[in-house]
Image (cartoon, rainbow over all chains, first blue to last red; front, top):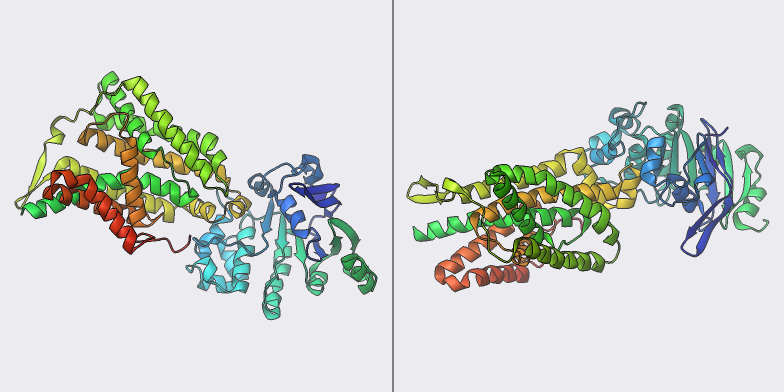
Amino acid sequence: MSLLNTQRLTAHYGDFQALFGVDIALNQGETIAIIGANGAGKTTLMRSLSGVLKNDPDMITLEGRRIGGMSADEVLPLGLAMVPEGRCLFPSLSVEENLLIGAYGRKVEGYWSLATIYDLFPILAERRNNPGTALSGGQQQMVAIGRALMSNPKVLLCDEISLGLAPVVIKDIYAAVPKIQESGASLIVVEQDIGQAMKVADRVYCMMEGQVTLEGTPDNLSRDDIHAAYFGVSA
Amino acid sequence: MIWVDTLTQGILLGGLYALFAAGLSLVFGIMRLVNLAHGDFIVMAAYLILLLVTLLGLSPFLAAAIAAPLMYGVGWGLQKHLLNRTLGNDILPPLLVTFGLSIALQNALLEAFSADSQRLPTGAISTASIDMGGLTLGVLPLLTFGSAVAVIVGLNQLFYRTELGRAFRATSDDATTASLMGIRPSNIFAKATAIAMLVVTLAALYLGMRSNFDPSIGPARLIYAFQAVIIGGLGSLWGTLVGGIIIGLAQTVGAAINPEWQILAGHVAFLIVLMLRPRGLFPRAVD
């Protein structure tokens, strides 16, 4: 059985339906990438998985447990953490406080702690007392990733972690992904940068208009397949 | 020398106003909620202390120590089950609900305790004083001021040195992202209002020992508290202490010039600060 599953997942914002029966599966130790154009439903999928959007309980299972109806603060202790789109650091908190709040109210056993996060991103140790929002975009992204890792999640959701960053900075951020994988976490990476997604993922799902239009491994997906699934037209 | 005495009394009175205001400032700072029933909760706590004093024959200080956890529970339940439902993008619902609560509380207190003016029995402490080189300071005002400073220091420590304080600040910044950290915003807000009610109990203790109270005086206490919070800059705790002192000083100096000017002078000082610094003296950098 997979670690995390969705079954015919639907999601609504009021009357507007954003997801139409999405099925994805994440296996233990695996990294999957979700790609798709703006408005394809990627972020809505992340918000549903993390509990920010509530769904039908049966639609999402984590280790066989039905978590679809849970709120974000109930989902996190079960081992699912998210790096939200746009980083969303807390402006009133310093870098170190932003990291510490990722492990709020819990003593969590596992590889990740302040020390190992500072090993992963040494620049954060130098900036630990700065306000989180005083950092550059790339450094803020490092804080957001570190903050999510502090809860030692089984599943880490990364929503558009390359958005708005310079290519050289994106390279730095993605250099951390193998270390995160080694720590035992399984990853779901939402990306608009298809090249980057293909490099880190074991499997790729392509979404369009709230549905999964393509699934496969980076090796067996052709450029034309992706183009068709991404835009809904053949190249 | 009379002026030095007047100024000192004004500063010490500011301590009482800062106590009125600290709870208001805490709640506003965390959830942008203005509790219009804040003054009435101070009066309610004063009656609760009076009840414990009369029924059990306790000293007001001991009675306040018993009332504090009860008020903590009242604050927790109030926020969790009523005020949390009013929070959202619209600022009107919390104002309307707490305004209604204020009227309901005043009438409930009137029904239960009548309109008669009450006072907490103080014993020797109300007349005790310390002589400091010609300047005579009352023990009770000193104790009030010391408690206000202790409350501000304590709340600051809580805010900036503890895990709960981090959660307060994070939830205040962005409740949705805070929930992704495993924080339940509704519980954090409930704890904040509960802690504010502890401060309210302390304010009620000194209010009841210093002056008479009856069910109708809550709104005026709210105005002093609100003025102190606005002068200090919304959400700044040290600013709230400074705001309380400014109101206290203005009232005492006003009263020294002409006893009829006491309350007016406080309001005028408030308006002057508002004209010169519309965001208060120590506005928070992030709003």
